[in-house]
Amino acid sequence: MLRYYGVDLLDLHRGTLSARRVLVLIRHLPRDSALVRALHGEEADWGAVEHLLAAVVDHLAIGNWLFTSAHGDSEPPRPEPVPRPGDAREEETAATPSPRELAAFFGGL
Image 1 (spheres, rainbow, N blue to C red):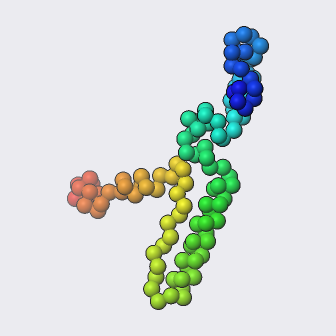
Image 2: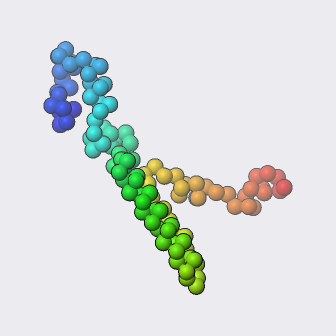
Image 3: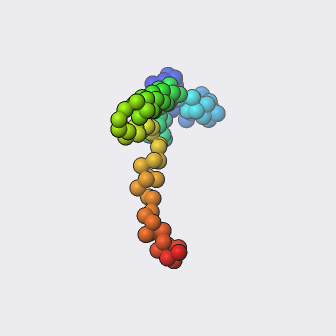
C-alpha cells in the first residue's frame, strides 16, 4: 500500500484510515503488486493486450498452416496455440482415459 498509494497500513490502527478505504485501495492495486501476484500467480502477468497478442499469433500460425497444407505436398503438423496462464489443456490431455480404461469403468460395454 505504501509503494503504490503512499498509505501506511498502521493508519488503520491509528484511526486515520478507514477499513472501507483500505478495501478500495486493495481492489485497485496494479497487476504487478505483491498481493495480486500472490492471489493470481502467473495470470497476473497477462492483461487484455497479452491475450490479444497471443490470439493474433495463434491466428497467424493457423493461417500459415492452412496455406502450406493447401499448397504443399505433405501436410505439416497443426500448430500448437500459445500457452496461456491458467490454461488447463495439458491437464485435460493427461487425464483423458484410454478406450480400455473406459470399457473397464463401464463394465466392459
